[in-house]
Image (cartoon, rainbow, N blue to C red):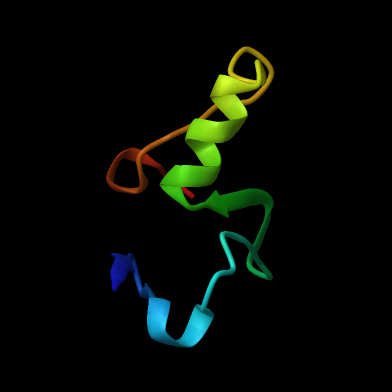
Length: 58
């Protein structure tokens, strides 16, 4: 489980879904770490800002 503010992502319930957009913050996309790593590996690291959940102010 991942806790973030008042939200909890339960991997048992989300299955293999690795990307989420919250209705409350449509300018934010939550990514699984493996998806973030793949995007960086494919060269998207300079086009997208990645933040650790504990450091993000959303």
